[in-house]
Structure formats: structure tokens, C-alpha cells
Image (cartoon, rainbow, N blue to C red; front, side):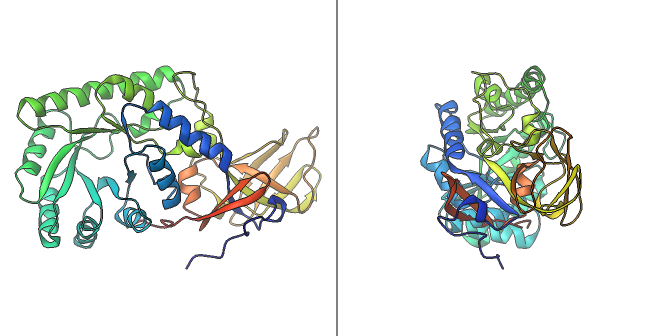
Length: 371
């Protein structure tokens, strides 16, 4: 059961209950427009695992995206329930209950999914037949992330043939996403990683088409690498997600304009100083349960010399440098999350702000959509 929102429309920022997930709507809209412009001429399918919010998905589609990606069936269901008509589950779906839900979803929207196993493709075929639908299926190819995916070349060809040989599935292309390349720190490192991925994807695509299997879609890419996939001539569709928000980890990457647009930090955690127990230390109400720590501690925005050094369940410990302005009891501070995706998943609401006041309250409809 979702909690009530931490504020109402028109509430000043200083009166928002905390911790709250704050979205600077002006920066968010500029980010959406920047990616739409950068992707012009190629299909854009942003990843909804970053935001889990149909309102954001619809804003991206209004700006030119063809649909969205999701990682889980329940996440895809939240998007379809919210009015999104084209969803790629860019992941493997295994298990009878999940497969039945996926196939039923395809009765209401265009739904596609990835496979890396012929047995799983057979189970997908059975589920599609039971639901009376035909599912688009992409073969996931391991282009360097060493996560899911068959190896390039002949293994991908064998699986594509298995998909094409079913009665209720349509082979729609390949999924070629190099997730671990997104946070290589230098532009040169990221470019080199995607050059290797492009070679694997290109060889696989060419082999499939030489064997009479039309590779309609080569889909992948992320916020940290998408200009390289776009320029390769291999990918036909881009899947960036974090660009709408950004985070501290992406902030540690190097970015070179005009190759990369300058995406702004639009997402913050609004937190309240709940204790000032000693000189040099302040405590805020955003602890481990308020943001994802997998990429390190959050940053304190716009307060030089104030550092978030430690979190426990409901407390965040700030170190206040000797030359810094000490936070006051009850003061509201903004934190830049270390990793935006798992942080968003902890909240029921995105609090959209403009001009110092709440302008929109968007439910994080796919919060906790793990299955």
C-alpha cells in the first residue's frame, strides 16, 4: 500500500516532509529534450527501470521515443497499466507464472522479450499459444558484459533459428547491451569497449541475415555509451535510462561535448537535519533505507565542505569541515544519490518541483516490481 505523498501541489520546498525524492522538473525536461535531439534519426526506447513511473515514460514518448524497456514483467505491467503501448522486457523471463503474465500483457500492448536459451523459447511459445498472442522475441547476445546472453555468431544463429521455428513467436532481432561499459570512467575507455561490442553485434547480425533471418532490430546502449552505439551503424535502437536523472556515479565519468549532451542532475533526496550533536557533525533523516548505496555514499548538493560519510538504517551522518557553514537543526538539504535506479525504487512518489514549489506528484507505480 503506497504511502500518502510527502507534500501537496504548491507546497514550498522547505515544507516537504522528508526524506522525499525530489525532481527538478526544468532540468528533467531539458534532459528529455537533449536525449531526444541526440537520438534523432534512430529509434529511442528509454529504460523505465530507472524511473518506474508511467508519467515519465509518457513524457519520453511524447518527445519521440517509440516505447520503453523494462527488466521485469511486473514493471512492464505497470507501464502498460499507465498507458504505455510498446514495451520491451530487455531480460529473460523464466517460470510458468511470469510467462503467463507476460503473454497476457501482450493482449493489451505490443510486448517483446529477450531469450538466451532454446528451452526458454519453447516455454515462451507455449505461453503465447495459451494466451492467443504472438510475441516478438530478441536473441540476447553477450557483447562484453558477461551477464546474460548467448555468445556471438553461431550460438546466436542456432537460437534465432529455434525462435523462428516456433508457431507463436516472431524473431525480431538481437539485444546487444554492454551494461558494464556505462561506468568506465574515460570516454576513450567507453568508446573502446563499444567498438568491441559493435564488432560482435555486427558479425552476428550479418551471419543471421546471410542465413535468411531478418535482423529487424539491434537494440542496446545506455547513458554512458549511446553516442558510440549510434555512430556504429550497427544498432537500430538505443536504450538509455539514467540520463533523465543522473547520479553521483555517473558524475564520476568524464563527458566530452558535443559527443555527449550535458545532462543535468535533476534527482535529489530532500532530507532534514534531525540532530546537531557536536561541532563538525550533523545527522540527517535519510539513512540506508532512503537511497541506494551500491555506488557509494550520496553527495551533499550545494554545501561545500559538508560530506555524507556514513549511513545507518534511519540516520545519515554528515561531516562538517571547519571552514564550512554548519547545517542548522531542521534545515532541509539536498543529496545526490550514488545510484539513481535503486534509489527511486525506495520511494512511492516523485515530487516534481518548479520555482521553489511542488508542481507535480508522480507515483512510482513500479516500485518493488521485482517479479
